[in-house]
Image 1 (cartoon, helix red, strand yellow):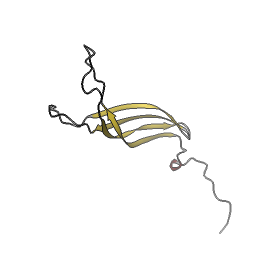
Image 2 (tube, one colour):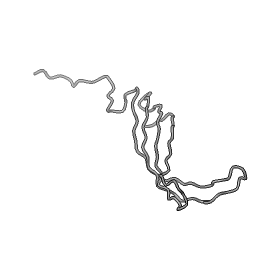
Image 3 (cartoon, rainbow, N blue to C red):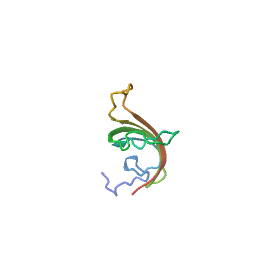
Image 4 (cartoon, rainbow, N blue to C red):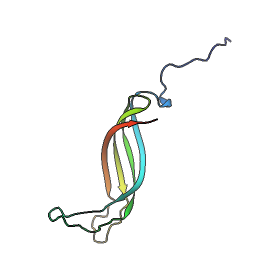
Length: 110
């Protein structure tokens, strides 16, 4: 069996994170949301609560990216977040508040 130098692959490997081109983005996120500083549009008076509590928030993200180089990419994604906000007894709609966010940008990294 012939013995020689190890072979070297000249094409970028997708698993290494250095490949350029299109790809998908998926993720999960968690944090807190605060509802506060509500005002009446007509009179500009403050509405209760003046200082809202922090509510646990979690969500999912999906989108597309175009990797320009090993350190930069353009992205467009959409997040769907759920806010676990305590409702008062006078509220007739008891569904969990949801936030749908569309975002895009450029990322640089090391």
